[in-house]
Length: 407
Image (cartoon, rainbow, N blue to C red; front, side, top):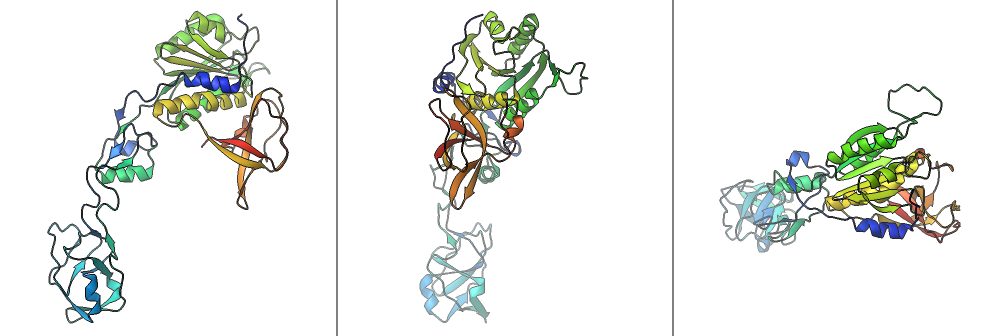
């Protein structure tokens, strides 16, 4: 067995960055199926919007200067929305104009219909308005050549509306990375399997990881559970490699026990070990390896360790393939209570709560239990991880500290 060399968290992230590849291709999807997909190109306007000054309310198109007269005659023709004949407004005339209509030539003001009284084919202004009132100027929304939505944007309902307004029915998006999942361990039972000994535990990692992978925009492929047997591991891993997944994620089998065969199996399969062992808590036994374009990420077996290391090492790589930011947003906030560091000489990531109280961001640990790296429940309702470096010690209430936002 090759001796494991533990590296710092910072060095591990530098090694992880070397695996970045970026968006190498794109696919087109129907607009109706594009929610939460990531744009693979800048969307650039090919014309001004609106192309002409446009009414933003129902009223009468007039010349601003004509408001000084007591009455303004109403033109015979209305100006409904969708009218493709642009009328010309004469002096001392008003054209009835509706929301969305192109403004008549020479009109510089739209007076709301509730601001006038109609008397004998004329309008009497009961409340005047400023010049330009009620008019959307040409190019108000965007100008030709503007980048309306930059590539790397995750499509929400807002982007869908803008895409539809641009008549884009099949936007270009980044393909979803494919992530294969396998759990290792003879003690693990799949859902529905009957327990035969008290030492057996129910599999949860493969299910929580599948949900995490989908949540961050990738596709998952489940390969189930493999027992702690090197021959079976090798056969299973070879099958997973043949699936052409971009990433392969395993849980368990990466520490220093007699039955932890993952690293040996990967070496037999000609994977280059990028790192094996990081001075972090939880998850210090994480292993990352590479063969050709496939990246293998072996996570610890304890559920909290597995999820936190997946967030720290797998999600950034998924983001990279999608064209999203590689690193998490870091937030500075004040400790509401004392933080006790549990492992000296390690970088710690601790689930925490972040609240805005009286205009100040505060960190607390309400509902978080102190215990082993199996406490996945500590991640419930907790999209934040408190960061504590190798050099940090306990931190006092009121101190400013860094939090990773997982949103």
